[in-house]
Image (tube, rainbow, N blue to C red; front, side, top):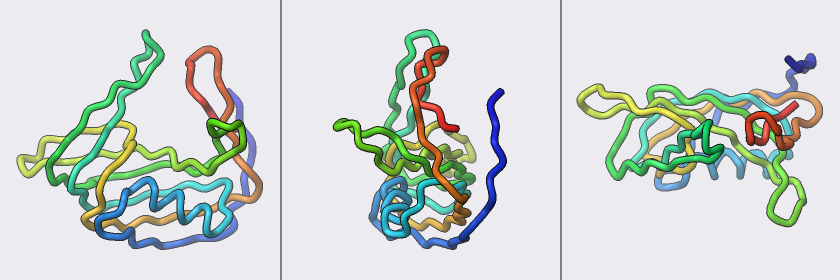
Length: 144
């Protein structure tokens, strides 16, 4: 286990833009407010969603697309820096969600993209920076 103590700094309540991308809205907030480390929770509804599941054996994400309205029963994640394709760090909103259908059936996973119908998110920033680096054991970019 690796850990470090963090101190909370700023807090935001956010209403995501209707018709915008859920994760992109969080990354725009991070860019606009220079947030390099944060934790967030949210709820709302989306018009569609691309959800990823990490295949631990093949060490790659599998994508499932839902082209239907879904409730965001729970959304949790963090904001950190992730090296971009050019190697420069970019702000990344690592987002997981539990989405529900009208039947009550739930789907869940890493929320890669989703069109916002309505979204409310609470964000708490931390002092300093969280940077994602490759973890050899998992094949994932993990922070600390």
